[in-house]
Image (cartoon, rainbow, N blue to C red):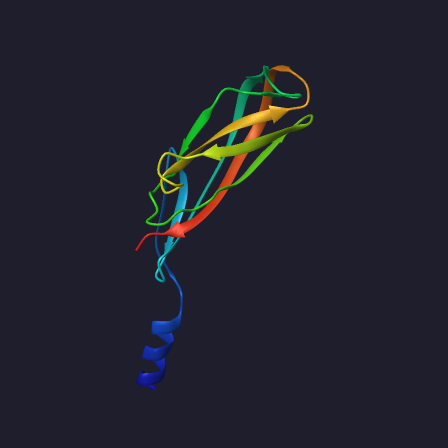
Length: 124
């Protein structure tokens, strides 16, 4: 019976650490997976012409914990009207954060929205 229990414990994935800081929440799994997410209400202008649309200033996002591997974010912008997010870069291949703009079909002097992101990487 003890052998079976030991085998089960070795193969079962479980949380070894979780926490949060001003940059978001994170969860580390024993298999090395790192999950991170963030939700916040923001307000900004979306008034810089970018071709046929408008964009906000550049926003940098820092993850709550750095990943050992690249982890491309899933970004969600929720708010009234047709606005969306555009992830366009990272200084370290998306290991510790990313940069994004908020985009819109028309100019917004003051847009209020909810920013959410989710990423998966590795911690070991």
